[in-house]
Length: 155
Image (cartoon, rainbow, N blue to C red; front, side, top):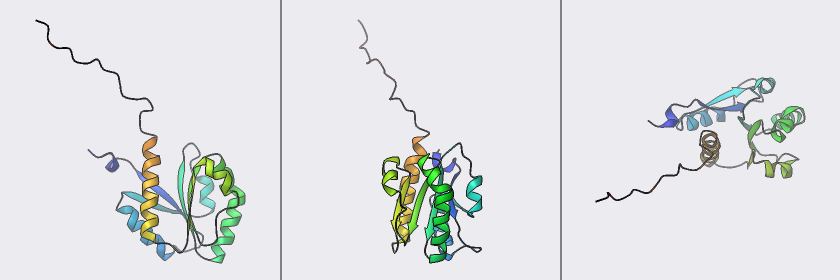
């Protein structure tokens, strides 16, 4: 049986307004093709995310109001969570990378996508990264078990 159908896969979608933006539904539909649920959360809900495991967060900033809220959020929690590897942030942004991007290159838990870009390409890339990282935790860290070569039957 395919392990993909058993796991409960989800990515948090960071919502900066009272209503869900139109592109949320597009991303949600695309991720459902990969059996991944896109769960919308508000800025205040990011504090309630489980801290014992890595949480994947998709942030899409398309207007100035969302950019201001995103900058405030960066100062409050995102910087701490990223530097301590509690969050893996997919940042789809039309205003540029976060200011401490050079520190995060070594951490490998931040991916930036500059808008305008194709949502199809972004979704496929996010899925590949998500699948690679989420499967890494379930793989055996050692190699395969050593076996003796088969001996020919003695006469």
